[in-house]
Length: 89
Image (cartoon, rainbow, N blue to C red):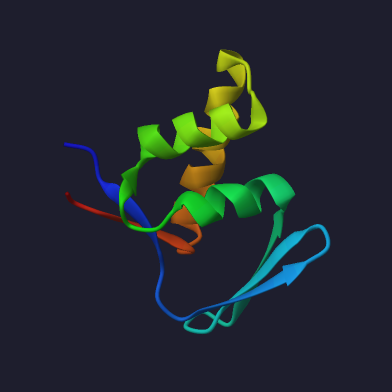
């Protein structure tokens, strides 16, 4: 079973014209998400797994299949940074 992806606790999210500024209070770290990364972030609500998020973002942006890896890589990066968390279904 795939893990569900959710936002980490303690994030302050601020919308700016070109995406989001996300402040991680626990790590005292700021992340700048461009518009695409902000859309990806919005799909991460703890109810969807990685493949579902990639599929939804690909549909929203009408991405060619070769671009799906870019969405997946963005998710992986946000997980590594602790902005997103994976939880077992």
